[in-house]
Every structure is written in C-alpha cells, then in structure tokens.
Amino acid sequence: MKKAKDLMKDLAYDRKNFWKEASKEDQNAAMDFSEGYKKFLDNAKTERETIKFYAKQLAERGYENIDADAKGKKVYRLSRGKNAAIAIIGKQPVSAGVNLIVAHIDSPRVDLKQNPLEETNTQMAIMKTHYYGGVRKYQWMSTPLALHGVFVKRNGEVVDVNIGENEDDPVFVMPDLLPHLSRKVQATKKIGDAVAAENMNLIFGSIPFIGEEDEDVKEAVKLNVLYLLNQKYGITERDFLSAELELVPAGKARDCGIDRSFVLGYGQDDRICAYTSAEALYDIENAEFEKTAIVFLADKEEIGSDSNTGAKSNFIIDFIADLLAHNNEKNDSVTLRKTLIKSQVLSADVNAGINPNYPSVHEKSNAVHMGFGVGVAKYTGAGGKGGSNDANAEFNSKIYNIFDEENVFWQYGALGKVDEGGGGTIAKFMALYGAEVIDCGPGILGMHSLYELSSKADIYSSYKAYRTFFLRG
Ligand code: MN
Ligand code: MN
Image (cartoon, rainbow, N blue to C red; front, side):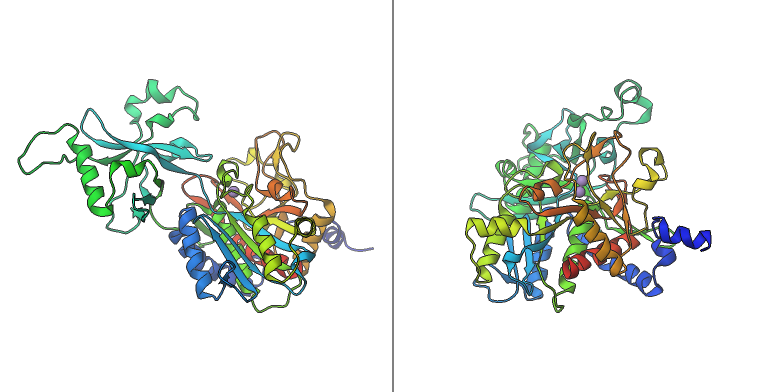
C-alpha cells in the first residue's frame, strides 16, 4: 500500500502556490516580467494609447502591415486606432485553423459628455461626465484623475490630449460630499445610488477671463477655459461634440506588498491579457510551431463588444480571410468558415481572485486564488450558466494537458458562487464562428476599480500559458 499522503497527491486536485512550488528561476522571471508590464500600463491607459504602443512596437520588431504589400510571416492590421490583430504564420496552412488569443483593451472609466463644459452659478468651470462600463461610481469621486483622448479638428487633424500624468501637470477631481452634510443626500441610500451619475462633475477651472478693456462678460470662467484650450490645442467648444475624452486615475502602476508580489494599477482588466499575449507571441517568433498564431486586441468589451471596434464586428474574421490570401491560400467564404471552425481561441480576460475582505461571494474550491497561476474558466455567465460559452470538455482537457506538460501554473476558477451575480467575456462571440473557445486569464482583486491588484505570479503564468497555447495548441 502507498502512504495516504502520496496517494492523496496522486489522486486529488490541488492548486499549486507559485511562490512555494515554482523554480527560483521562474520566480525571478516573474518579478522581472512585471517591470515591462508596469511600463506598459503607464503608457497604455486607454484603448487608443494601447494601439499606439503596439503600432510602434510592431514596426520596431519587423512586423509588416498586411495592407501594405507584406511579404513575410509576421503581419498585423490596426483598425480605427482601437483594434489590432497581430499574426505569425505557422508551419501548417492558415486553413488548418488558427490559434487565436483575444484580449480587450478598453477599461471602465469616466468619459466627458459630448457637450461637457459649464460654468456654475458660483463661477466654477465644470465638465459633465458619462461613465463607461461597469464602474462603481463612488470610487471615482475625490481621487486625482487624468484626461486622455482626442479632439478631431475641422480640418481633420487629430489632436492627442494627455493631461495629468506628468509630475508637473495639473490633475482633475470630482469632489465627493463631505460626511458632515451627507446624511440625507447620500448616507441613507443604497451604495449603487449614493453617487448619481449627474453629480459626477469634474472641477476644471475658476479663473475668469479678463479682456484688455476689462469688460465684464457672462461666464468669464468658462470663456477662460475655452481660451486656454484654444491656446493649447487650437480647438473650440464645438470640437468637444465629436471628441473622445476619457478620465482615468492619474499616476503610475506600482509594486504592492512588502514582498513586492503584486502589481497595483489601473486598467489591468484587460490590458494584463493584452500585454501577456503579445509578449507570448513575440516570444515564439523564432520557434517552430504548427498553427498560425494570432493576438486580437479588441475594444468595447466593457459595454458589450458592440460597435465596429468591438469583438462582435467583422474585423477579426476579415483579417483571417486576408491572412489566407496572404499565405497564398483560397479565401472564399466556405474556406474561411471551415478555417474558423477548425480554430482554437483563448478568451484572455481577467477573472475574480478571492478577495480576503469578501470571501463569501466565492466558492473556494471553484474560484481563482491569487498567486496560484493563470485561471481557466470552463464557463462564465449568470444564473444557470446563462449567456455563457461553455467550453467543450475535450478542448478544455487539451488545454490543461499542454499547460501541465509545459509546467504552467494554472488553476480552475469560476467567477463566484452560483447565483451570486455573474459576468461575461468575449468568449461567446468568438464561439459564434464555430471555433473551440475557453476563458483563460489571471485573477485580480478590485476588478473595475481605479486600482486593480494582480499577482506577479499570475501575470507571468498567463504569459507562459499563452506561449504554450501558441506553441502546442
Ligand atoms: Mn475584462
Ligand atoms: Mn471588465
């Protein structure tokens, strides 16, 4: 007879703590890997900035724009400044099916309304806002915010805006109510109603414009704001109507914890998967692998993946059709459909790690534990698995096997207890094309807050998982 302890090890499933069981080499690599990741988070706080980051990096790394007479195996396409598809052709034809990783690069935030500027009756200039995605509104009050985005001028010129990230930049704030006077307006309300969207106004200025002749104009504070913006960007108030201006937390991503085992920063849902999947793709550039590997960076996931930059659009399908042609293969609609059915997709999105402040919403054995590697979720959704891609057991098993064979730290993890709430990912939209799809991404704490927390063990394990999928999937 075997010892019970050994038998348990053979027969029972248990997650492995990366910091306990990974090699010293892998642990050091995890620490190093997060340095580049933090820089990425600082430089790519919006979907547009993420695409700019990759446009530059792809050119530097010798990837060719598929629309510009590309010849090689490393190609990409950018779309509308908010989407990217990056591919390396494998040994097999594209029509044998591709291995695709999809991550989204939009994050919950607070946008400016299209006609945002107003002077209050106490002579302050404010900007009205409209939140984007699933934000907990109270978290965005009384915290320093930076303004990122674009104006498009009448002549078509696109002007980038980025105020609040440099040390000497001003920042912005939406002041919350003081506790002394919150008894009726806030304190008796449910947390979701405590801050009304219409109370989320940004303080923008307070100095009135004084003309040369000292004449008294109405709304002189608003005028001064417009004057300063015109000086800086050459825009007028009309240009706000078409602009895309996003408020995000000001400041940089930081190490967190006395042992520096975590990264604290904005927008890790889901730029953590964008970064780790792109790094995984770069890493296989010189490797031998069978299936064409693609990273798809999608926008608009946080509001349902709609619009022509969301994952429901035809962008990625069209890219795969053009990859077939690029590789001198047929790309008629039947070939394309069959290619998609033969394809495999990792829906790379974050999962909810068990939060020690609120463990009750999770079911410990079926949830993601921080520091125990990349999470894999067979399904997401709500209620009776509603609105979920439910990955097929055969594909699910294959993923676990290749992860084990390559020493990837992975763990099973669903979002929360059954009927506790729910959520979805891009997985089900990718599954529409008939490909095998599974959700695979790290757990984070404080998801959708201004400062999301990730484990360096899980960041690194996600990168290794994605690399393994490209090489072995
Ligand atoms: Mn997400
Ligand atoms: Mn999200």
